[in-house]
Image (cartoon, rainbow, N blue to C red; front, side):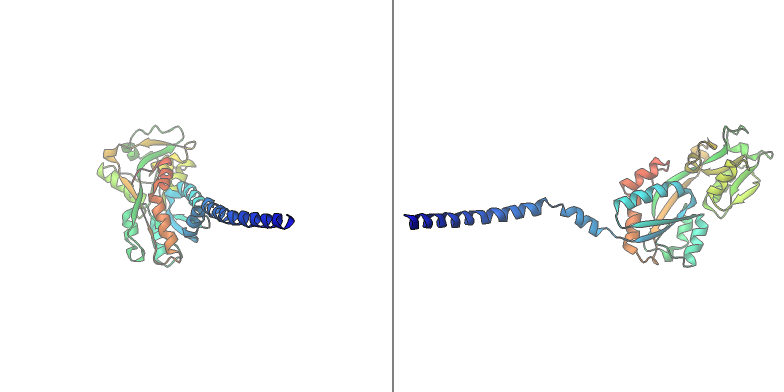
Length: 269
């Protein structure tokens, strides 16, 4: 009886083991299916790089926000921005400054370095001009034509700067003659003059005036008298991170990038 009992126990053990093998295999398969491989694969496909982006001065605030959002969504990528007037950025590119992408405040500037671009420029946003005045508008400036008052200290951007070109364009169209007390190298310098009280008024982009609501007021300019500024972006041929640079430019045109730009007051491209 003991030998028979032992044989029955051995047979039962073999049967149990046979049944457990496929169950273990199934458990292993399920475990693999539950592992979030897609997240790892997605992260692995994101270009990881140190990017340097040359960007128009009027993008200073919004691009700091956009850069932080992009880095969060693309682990392993770090973006450094260099802000200046578009004419300065173009000169840097022509002189071979190490950079991965370029964003200017007008199409003419970026077209000037067409041979250095790795792809056709994509317009990522638009903007309009306003008259920036001191807080509370102490000089009671109501419209563009008021800038012709010779008693006002008006500051403009230099004519080679995109905002300077736009400013002169709208003044000429309305036959308004303005003799600026200074011509600045970029729009942020114009805004600073007004903020510091060194000028009574200046022509800047709407988004720049919006960035300093406690220091300046903005006098709207009707669309019929205004100019539309376009912001084209493109990766550069000299980039050592071509794929990552192209991805950042695409991201700026995508839903997340566009939301950040439009939340900052920029218009749809």
